Image 1: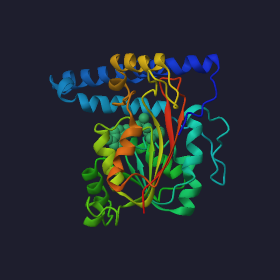
Image 2: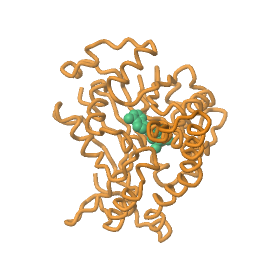
Image 3: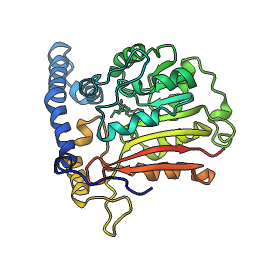
Length: 317
Ligand SMILES: C[S@@+](CC[C@H](N)C(=O)[O-])C[C@H]1O[C@@H](n2cnc3c(N)ncnc32)[C@H](O)[C@@H]1O
């Protein structure tokens, strides 16, 4: 689909270029440096583990990321007594999310839900049209907030937190531990058109962070039931090309994506990748079935370093 942006104001243009720098400074100042120092000093001097900063670097980064994300995603949305969230203050990419989440149905996989920031936007459809929601969140430091958000939204009975990534084997093991009967046909690549597990998958700002996007997106596709839908709101590589593109794009924003990546964006922001071509991975995942039944993605904010794709993809019946 073509780009559907209206021209930005000067302030929007400027913030579209510097947003990643602001986030990196925030992560460095408020979370990354304090958590890393505290952890290093504690493990060396109190626990006597001299090699801990090297051997436990993954754990330290997870801890720093969970601190950063808990602060960054602190509740900003209010929900009335009928479970209807106030969306009037949403702008930018945040405004793309609530209408798409109204479409969730059946058995839902919430991929990398973080602290559950998006949960208030699907309270109503979750109560009416959903049998169970599985939140696959590998960062255990976020689980307490996620659990609390599910309770506040009145979804504690339906929302199951899985301590796993979107990797297929991890996900299926975690589902089985949670008591879900996953039969082999559902996970067998040859029979997946007959089965699958999920009717809806929610992918919001998460496919930028998975370590093996081609494999993970292909695996997620295989776990989607025929006729099932993937709800996508993801920031992606800037669509600039030398020959011009219907999706728009900006040379300056594309170059800045590379600069921010070199300055440590991924290291500071939970392994997030600024210049990922997620749309191509999504298209490729369905190639074995002759493509998606519908592939309805909108391109937004093409002048920025955080341009988005958003929409719904439906798997063939
Ligand atoms: C930028 S946060 C977005 C959280 C949430 N989707 C939101 O919109 O508020 C990215 C989330 O993806 C999770 N994540 C990272 N790698 C993942 C993986 N391989 N599988 C599932 N989730 C992952 C992170 O732990 C983090 O919670």
